[in-house]
Image (cartoon, rainbow, N blue to C red; front, side, top):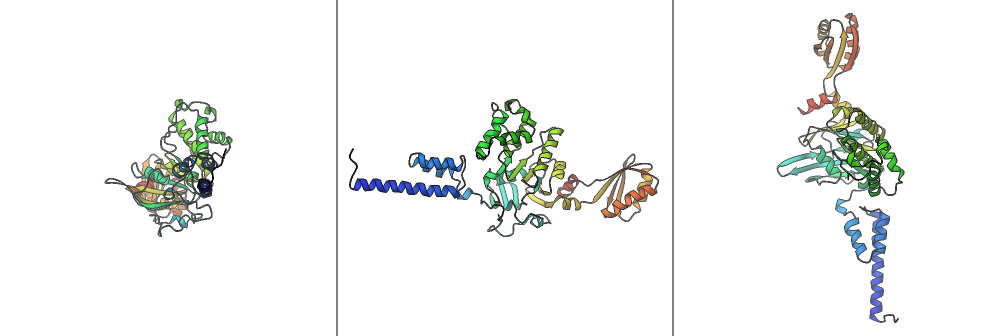
Length: 395
């Protein structure tokens, strides 16, 4: 076989050199770029082994995340707000970035607005989620909570404004309100598929760990078509946990669960607190009060409050409920004469509610006045809860 000579030979040499240089450039780009659908090593094989230029085009069009969609990989030692527009301020009276550990927020939005025609779902929302926090996003139905989570997850684009993530997009896991899966797949297959897509480098034992964490080990080989809604909810949480995410976004994670399942989910969130940043969107305010340390109240698309739960509760008048054995009316008369009592109400046999402007004085004075009146104290509990504070804030 005679080799080509002359200009043809030089043309083949130049073409081969050009292919090598292009592949080398793409492989270098692969080391820095954010990719999707396949792990980096698989895209490297596509570039090198698939016929030129098909492999290269596949990587550029399908595998490589465009710069416009890429989330900066801030890492744990960088501030994702660096280079961001100045004045990323929460709407709250308290700037959560002043909280311990909030100097490096995982999530920060700047005047995020989302409109659908004439409807404004989000209006100039500045959200700041400290790293490692359990952040409760609460609000009435239609307030914009799910829209905000969708934007943070990259499923929707804001009409205006910007947001920043302090982790790679692939380290963010999202649980939708009502997760659904192919009915012919078993629970193990569903979770293993999620592992293959988001964290193929992790071992298969992560599947068993995730199923065990959500209480589905006994149902691992059952097909999901026979699962109840509560079981599907827990399976959805397992698909999120299998990739060991740094940020976990949960949209109404316990709304379909029975009391035992809800307790398991709250315990799980409690175990993840501090090691995983959690954004919990729910209308069950008691759940938020149990597991969250920071709360954002969103109403009609606007952020009405953002900061520690304790400060939100402190903005509400301090209320206490008393259960006594004896003359509750006489006790109410005595309490009404105290300067630190602003209101007292008898709510039934032996039950009173006391409103005070000095919580410390009330906690000392209430047991004393009960004892001085010769009345037995059965219970004394704070009546101010997140629901009360929420209603006062949004009414």
